Length: 314
Image (cartoon, rainbow, N blue to C red; front, side, top):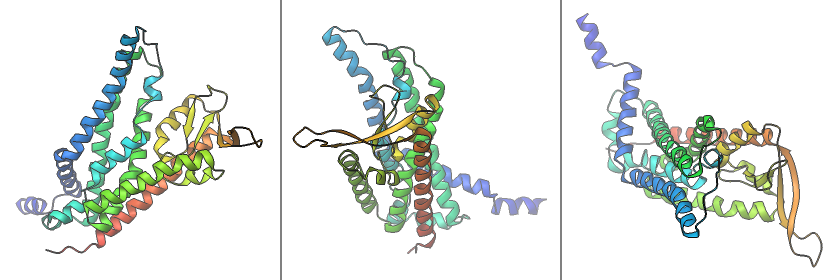
């Protein structure tokens, strides 16, 4: 019995070793100044979103109208998804190699795959806790400013979609970090990819007939409108908008999405919106989910493979 206990102490169970890696990574995430700064900025922006209408309404002496769909119709945008992904996992792998902590980490009774999965799960827990607090804060603030809110039971759906959208960027950042082992290259590469898509997607969406290409790239994608509803109900096909698309589908399962471009129909006349195509919202949502899952799987595999094969110099 004593010998068995000693063997167990020397060789802890897989779950214990895995959880040790997760706790190690969680503590590292909590101590990151970049992450804490980003969290403060996110809360500050949400506070401004609530406070600004109140301030402006007081100056104009106009009461704020009720908006029961403010919470489920809002949420964290694509820029926030990217920034939270960047500050959460930018140093997850590259930082270990730069600081040399990868050497003592791999001397523990853990495999590289376990280390990688532990870091990935820690990133998930970090984002889950962060977004839960942010959405709770948004629900409370929205209720105070805009009155009772509809469909608050859909907030977990919003949370799930937001995490899935963020993990597209998490996987890309991890892949760059595993391949380069440089936090500087991670930051520059990830920001360059995001800006290229952030700036290029609206141009292609509005002025080109090839907006369908944006279905298969990360980011906001092309913009369309849900037919049969308010003409201002716009939707985007990109991976950054899975949460809002899920909400729209639950509330309007039979809706269709129409895409437009800006062009000139009659020579000499000003540009106008030209209808390009219409498709069911269900197909629109399914495609976004498949693209997000595919990108996350591919880039996570690249990150894992590069980390598993990386040489460690003591």
